[in-house]
Length: 157
Image 1 (cartoon, rainbow, N blue to C red):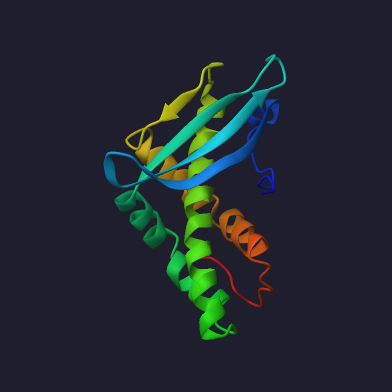
Image 2: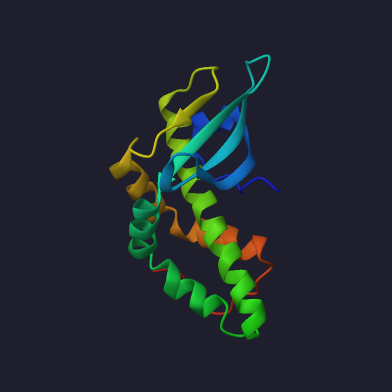
């Protein structure tokens, strides 16, 4: 898994972030997913793991906010039915990863301690929404790159 392209605030450049695992279901919390990231700050001797949790209702809201389903349908229009189905599933996983990455970036910008931690699904809901909306082109570019899609005149709203 390659790291997402840098589109971070200056504070975030102090950190090296890689996706460790996810999205995966959260045990005991139906309709909730998490992604776990390895985070290393230059001044730290070691890195930490940060689990970023998001609910399905938040994912659905963000999907609507950025019109992701329309973008995805356009992006996959030239694929065979079989390829389209597998790409749709993977694209939704990548969308969740991108949302979680945006949420993690907010934590990095506001300051984070050198402790393994979890950003709960109720953390920074309006801020996460604003960030995802502002970074829609980045998110769709990341997904297109991961899926090796050649996009023609497909733009996010």
